[in-house]
Length: 189
Image (cartoon, one colour):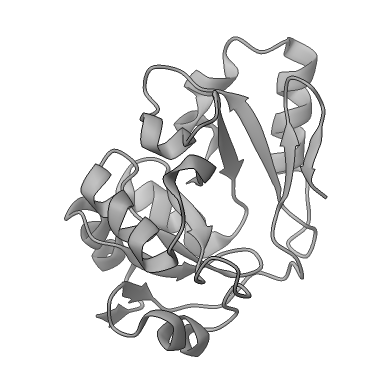
């Protein structure tokens, strides 16, 4: 299925199916992060080991507030500023945050933290809000291949297996940088 309806795409996620959708810089594959079967399907499509973990994408800070509560106030402010005070063509920032009991082990992989990004991409914001919370966001490509930058590229990788929410990529030229909120380490520059 290919749709431009955010409501239909959110329903696909609620039904436990995989969705390909445009993000800030590349196309992503997503699902309901609480649905282990849907998550396993993403790993199968990507040929990705579960140990690596994935990013959770949120449409607003309130969807990930529970992961920010126990952080030092200065770090919390810094994180929120990277999510809310950037232009559409600036590179997005994903943060590794301490995971709480609400985050399934399969999302974290072999890590104690969870990768989280609050997006500024209008279609992704609408999708997360229509779904009612954060969703899985991992690049739409087989492990080791270049991330897809168009619906046609995703279709070449995966054919009709995922559902598609068609739309435009954001203006960022690169996938998000990844920073560790506790150590300050740059995971992906």
